[in-house]
Length: 455
Image (cartoon, rainbow, N blue to C red):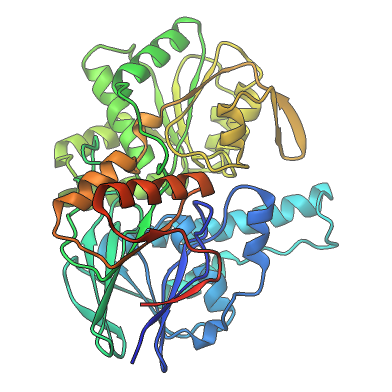
């Protein structure tokens, strides 16, 4: 009995990861991401799911980021009845991320209705907090290296991918065809500030590999030195340093580096605020799962003790009125939603302030526009001038660049018959394909959206 793989998302773009494995009688979905970025991509979230959700037997997640897990509440709402499998830390983070995504959906719909900038009479959210809570009831979590059978005939296990807490490569062995396909998920760095490197892969007949930075390297700049310079200069001119950060992973890394620099006397002692309820909860999960990353208990506690957590809406509004030098870390990381938008509205028009992006900015997001020199950006239906200094610290990315991914692929004993390159912009994916073919001689190709292949 053969196994088929269909690419339902994550091709030609870095968002919306969804892969369907099937044989004659079962269907297993690997990742169930939401699309983010340009409007044409975001529209895909509203399209009817390419296969009937009730026909999918189970879902397996590589990690918790919304572009890999965010469509789950909609999938359950539309009829999916099976279980959702992931690692322990991914489960913990999804408990934070999914209800938050539902909340943002509801808020955006209300805001569009209030301001009348939707073409719909009454804009509806894609899913609600309640839908997210419903989806969480389907979760079942496992340890790394534990083999389980989510669907009859499909044996699955997780190995650490080093990207964020709980992130994994998903290994699927199909007993009927005796074939193994491995999904890289998002692959971490070889020498990350806080995450351990991804575990080398030993066997795959077919490999599905990400290519976010398939055509770029992170360069040699030292992110700690960069942050030291930016924060010191900004504070020196009386400004505020705002860091839009992914609530999971990046926020914790930034806080760790800021407090480390302060402790070493390399930047002035300033108040440090974390204004993202989601990032606060993720930081708590990060401290709980400290065995999975490089920071010890006391380094985690440093983040906890020295950061002012901004929890309520009132506290957030109060922080928005602050005009003295400080550092604000807030979500979302691509400035596509969340509390960071209110800070951008007050801080962007003033040249004393700095905005620091620290990770991949998907095309079409405000973050992408800002790092590419936009003179104004649209927030909540209005344009705001960009006078603040904008910085992009690519070197803080949680994705391995193409050199790091090639080094990782070389560490194991892989000899796949076929490699499919996904999760990258078109040029990045095609460049990654060339790198893999030239270095290893493997047969690599970039699949089309909805293409189905035999494993």
